[in-house]
Length: 260
Length: 340
Image 1 (cartoon, one colour):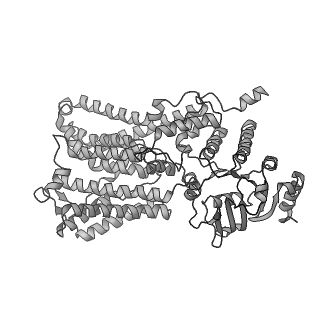
Image 2 (image 1 turned 45 degrees about the vertical axis):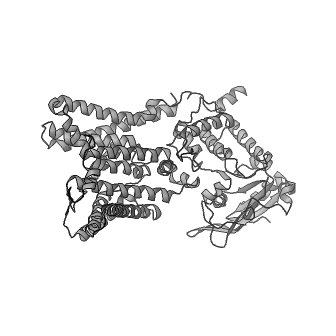
Image 3 (image 1 turned 90 degrees about the vertical axis):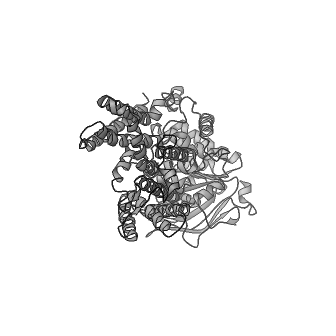
């Protein structure tokens, strides 16, 4: 936390003046956003505020309109892409889970970064066994219950989310983005997910945490961004604002579109 | 509380890994269909079907479209279709003939032909993937385009490809090796290579992901445009190989080369269990299905059955197999969704 407030610490990721327009619709306008090392940043805002667009821009899925800059650890990167972002250690648990449901679990787990052997061929055996290990160690699935060869369609919502979360966790990311990770989860699964967010911080990594439920977000974050209609409506250190004040301001923003 | 927790746990009702049958069901199914049909032929005409000659006959002709079916499997798994490969067969072979006639040595002319096929496939892939045009529509267009270009280039005339003029090509694509039809050796070699490409390469893994859910694939850093373009390019190159193999087999390049290949090839892919919806499919399935389609042709005629029955038989085998596959697939799905 103290680290986050030191001006000297270089942000893991920084967005400067980033806008994103889809046809006539401006989803993001002139966003300034940063995440410091070891910091958990909350992202709040109503539906359509631009949370998911912001996340997908950070991930390289959307290209920002010209004039916007993406800076990774102090270095401006122009050819930002999902592959690049993942290569640099940014992982996301997407709201829509981003699974390929006709495929077995192991294919989903290693999607986009499949393991290869020394011949350059896919190491299917290792992916299967790694997958089984991850599912039982990290998501608490007993290895018999969820087999790496099971097709994702056949799994429950919580199990699918488990795959998406484990996938982000496994690759030892610098920055983990969680976009509504608790949606559709049971109580225990939700708790497990929130614990996971806490562990990110303990491991000295950073996270961006998005959730509709402010009661989930507030306790785990260090800093909060409030988005409204594509703009940053406010940035708060947790030490500066209580949960009640925050709720009040969110109502105010929703009504008037401004923080004041 | 404790009952609550237990309830919230992932259900423990799915204890077994998917069975072998479930995982390879459609591939076993197609092999079963093949065996059943073969038995039927043997019973119908034992004299013909216990003689090696009939097998040699369709082992020579089947790979001419079968190798394209193997490559087309990639495109279908990505959720697309290519209807222009018969024209690419012709255009590529025409390129070979023109280059060879211009005095260029045959190996270089052959490479030139493959380059033409790759360019055609790349054009298809780019139009489909980059511009997001439905492949069903655009490959009809490019089919006319490539065929038209070929007809203009050849001025509608054919080229003899005799053994004394192209001995090497005849050795590679026509002469049996130790009595085994070389065409089927090519089919096996290409089958193994493409199986590895689909199941043991990153490109192959991405082919499945792109066909299953392109948005998810993109979110996880898969370059959807590139994967699709590569798949179409593969079909282009293999189509040219098939065109040359077919022309050498007939000692002559006909400007109409490729006519009649379209439905056989596509039927092989679907009969082999590759889903038209993308995301699932197999090389083994397409391989066996090609031979089934090829055998029907040769089998009906050799069994002394009136050739008019060929199409009827084709239709029957394809419709029944695809219906069965769909039913079995649904069963498996439902079974595993409820976990019982």
